[in-house]
Length: 241
Image (cartoon, rainbow, N blue to C red):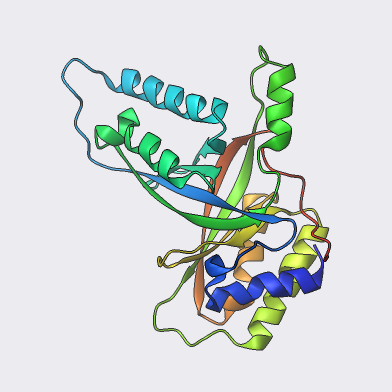
């Protein structure tokens, strides 16, 4: 990724980037969903394992239909239980299918979704591999998912803070420690999603060094995220047109 491209993307932190006619070169808009646990109720005649199996089958069906490009469980014990990434141009279809998910219908999962501007190619290599290896089990990899959340009432981000953020992301990508990253929209406190290839301790250190975090304007929340090998690109470079 070039610094010029990163600078262009960084400006979305304070702008209505989703209103642009086109995404930046090398990026596309996905729907990212966060599955949190809730107090549900088993339907009559159903068991929790049956609902879980049907939930996995629903995700698999959405992947085969091309709606889902990535999914995986969260490896800690908090309320966030999984993260899913869908195509961004099929929102109505995605929302309808998610609403019919057995764990969602029974109230055991709640799913919040929003547009996520991120590098193209998420899920592409895995889909090719799966097509040629239908009987081979997935090899799971644990990434470190970092959610940058805005602290409401904090001062606006300065140009120096944004410039430093751009440089930090650029250096981390070049060092091979960041798989994908991009901003999220739709009015929540979540501003950016970053997926590190570094281990937990290093991801914590990298997140803590982010200019917005150091300035007390954002907080970084990290979760181990397990995804099949090949789902996420091996870094991202975006040449300017």
